[in-house]
Length: 306
Length: 196
Image (cartoon, rainbow over all chains, first blue to last red; front, side):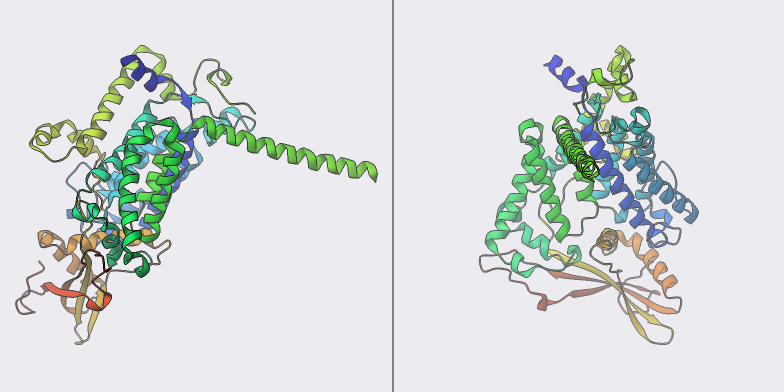
């Protein structure tokens, strides 16, 4: 058992899942930072609706209190998120982003939801992975254009921590839903009727439909349980990732949940099969080459006929 | 194009990334092993249900919580709440005019990614347990309305009954309930509590 655990922790795997996860995480941090910038004075500055004395008592890494410090942190976060997305020294910028996210978020903890927490958790855990090993500026500079669309094999130990985190989110999201409304299949109706959480207003035909609501309520529980447990079964992963993304899409369309969906989409990518990703990319490149060769042949034929 | 493997790598000395190089030495493997054990404990154990046992060992993951690695995934649980919530302010200006302030509303596409923060704040500021937020809220509103003579914070809510076999029994026509939970300056609005 110890040997197989050892193998699982150290045997190299394709870097594609990490690269795709990094790209989505970078974009999510970018979105988080830019949307936060609009509310710097009202939610984070010295004259915000929650004053600096209301900051979290937990360790804050950097005490961000003045307007100047807040803007510096936000601009640095935006720059770091771009660096993460393009894969320029992503480990350093992921660590920097984690420190800044915690510092900014703990300035006004009253405005946070679970999406903010999972965003910073995944930022730290992705920093423990070689996320710049594929599809990155770092890889381009190292191997050039020809090898860019290939991914090296990398040590998977950090990847497993990301996977564990994602799996725990779903498992305990399921576990905590022990109330009567979840059991009797009506919880989704109540959630969708909460005026302050609606994104596009109430969907009357949906919240009133007993059968669809029961399907959605129990479906949510089943999907969360499956994602919490069965993502570890390799053969089921492609289907579960697709189902997980659909669940988040549904939640994001109807409810104001911030960055919970995008952050977990980045996390779900850690379960991708890197070999399959490489296979698809190879096929696409081969198809493009064939069509480019065909067009060259057509041009040559046209010239010789002329 | 063929699949890349460890042998394909252009660096003959081994993997180019620090994370993979770490497992090439005995010391590195030991360090990785330790990180995996600590990481697993910090990620998994804080999710344990509340119990005396959990209270006894919570010092184990206290460092993780302190640095910002927090675990709390109880969303819409154990049940989704059964009330829609809202906070607004009634502001009487020096001129005698009364204006209502509501939490800012943004567009549902991009603005939704700002909106949730205000809604979260609103969920907390309305609580009797968060009187510490009331004074700063009034101060902020007085900066927004420099000629305010009186500010009253009002919590509003709609009670939602669970869906039953006949469908939803509440309707928008029920409307919002309201309660004036604090007023500035003190004593300017009868029995309403002070915001400070």
